Length: 287
Image 1 (cartoon, rainbow, N blue to C red):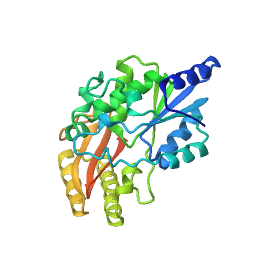
Image 2 (cartoon, rainbow, N blue to C red):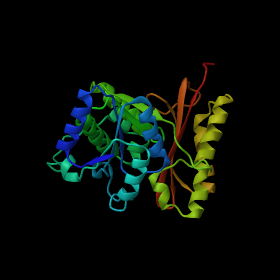
Image 3 (cartoon, rainbow, N blue to C red):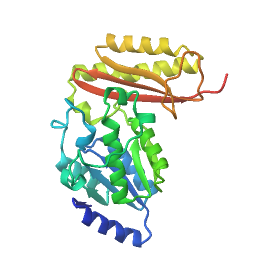
Image 4 (cartoon, one colour):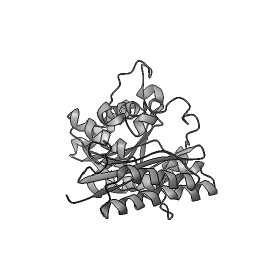
């Protein structure tokens, strides 16, 4: 694996690969890699000739009071994991390389249609930071495809829309959420959890499964289902931020007794100070 930290070297390496007709997959990450990230690398190998991972803890997507300074940075361990997965290139830029004119003066990219509710409601500037850095990575690497995890469902939906709207010739590939044996979605922030909080956190997936089962059984009392789920999360010792049933494409909440063929149930909850995300999708036939 070749590690590059400057745009000039990255572009030269990509140019050489493309001159040989190779298809390139990009896996953008913020590091602190776990089995979920490695599943993205594995998927990239299945569909591309060259796999490029990036590690950049993007300050633009962290809001005031969030954990940017304390976000786990484990580059030595990450390098070993990427090497073991036969990753071809790792791009590890610093802030100056990504934002040479500073963050405040940088051109920003956003999609308000998909990014104002759910995570966008709790973290108003988050998706602007995500879209800006991802669009920049897309421009730098110009991959044939980019691989993202489905755990961050809203992020994946926004990146798909951004890529489509900006006419970027990139296939966006989603990879199913990798889970711990308890069902807890794997996340870099799981490392913040105590044993007690980790045990409490498994309630998130339990409630997602419960709501999915009830919808598939015919329930359309969506408001009641969400209220009940949040009550159960509280009983488990968690602090729910949101628990919503939405249309899988538009991410708009589905109103009581309304219908959508493709549904996603999304939740964010705090275990102590650690904010955890998860979701579950389902398709139903028209009734």
